[in-house]
Image (cartoon, rainbow, N blue to C red; front, side):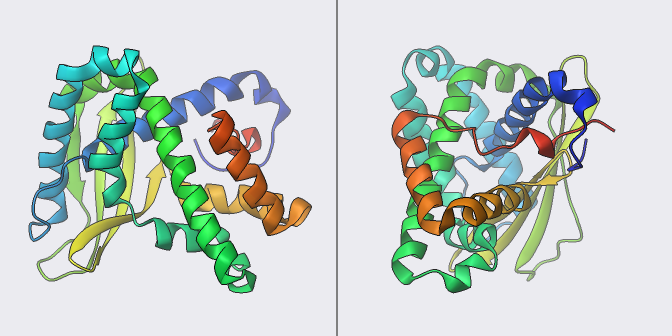
Amino acid sequence: MRVGIHNSRHDRRKPALIKRWLLILLIGLTCFGNLPAATEPPLHLVIDATENLVNQLKTNGDAIGNNPRLAFELANEDIIPLIDFPTIARSVLGHHWHHASPEHRDDFVNNFRTFIINLYTSAMVTYSREIVTTADSFRFSSRGWRLGDTRATVVMEFKLKGAAPVKVGYNMHWKGDAWKVYDVHVLGISVVSLYRKNFDAEIRRHGLAGLLKRLAAKNRTGTFSAFIDNSNFQTE
């Protein structure tokens, strides 16, 4: 699967592709819960974190399904602090960031952060059982990390039922006193690039103020996945 040009032959398959993409993203993000001290290599952090969060989901899976607030609390405590939202937000806006006022920049970072938290929480409620049943297939590797490096790519591979193995890649950097995620690659698609493309289209049509208004509206109404444009997905 890759980012590609719209192809009408796959129209009927696109909702299922997007749902699968979100499931894979959610499973991949489980590896960033409850990280230990950030002085360890990123690969070890991811492995330990995966075990911690999967155990939480095994214990609280039914409760999460019945209580979205619990999913929000788990995400806000364990997942969200490890994501570098300011860096991601700046990358997502691309050249529009340089033309945005300080107020619009702050507004976008806050709204995008809320959007991702809500998207993740909604998906956790839906897919917590899939994460647990898939956990035995998790495999991890790193790409060329050495002690003292301030950037790392950690790859998580797992297998969904009836499908080929899937890889999720995490671009991480050392920021302040901790490792932070600044991009995620799902099925070869960069999350940052995907949202940059879709938000750029929104800004060209409605301006940055229009994008901010729409983001805020989605955060209020719970329409969390609508910015993932069907035309970004086609099968090989």
